[in-house]
Length: 282
Image (cartoon, rainbow, N blue to C red):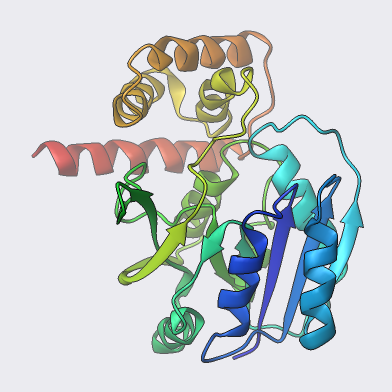
């Protein structure tokens, strides 16, 4: 199977060498890797070009956007820029962050999952962060969710869900739409990806309201948003974030912001979320 990788990057000179090194050491190499240099002011571009000289499947694309780092929109706009520079000759496409170290068999294992079942639409491993010299699971999400840092999509699934939405919540709506269109989402706990920079480390302060806005845009409704907000705030060990998330939800609702999904999809998503919550309770 052919696979392409797109890596949005902004000032990643500290980590991108490790990420690219782990990609060029894969047991099954990607056919193409596009690194999108989004307004970097450091040596990111030079590092990528050095890799590209030795590995012809790697290329660099430059993009200029606002320096402010808001979750969702900026990274997906950079991803889209990378996508524009690729052809359609792939079996699956991967969005990768520039601060990861993959085990050498990572993509070989992803391929074996895709080959095992034509209805598998997305596959991914798990993120691990360093704490006191040990690598521990970055426990921000459920075990059946693939982290936004390393999402692999089967081409047919990727096209059916309409690609990635340039808004916070993109890495939740993609999986919910997968399920809406009857694709399977597979996580593999044997695939441990080292995540070198904690999630959200560079987010602008206004981003805290964006989470509640994201819940609104997914069509969750107030009750599911309240439960999801409380759960996320407690996972982050910052209970007061709950109020920021709820505030963001009401701001988006009163402004009548457009949803990321259709009315039919929103109804499916609410039913799916209630079902998952009941499964955990009983």
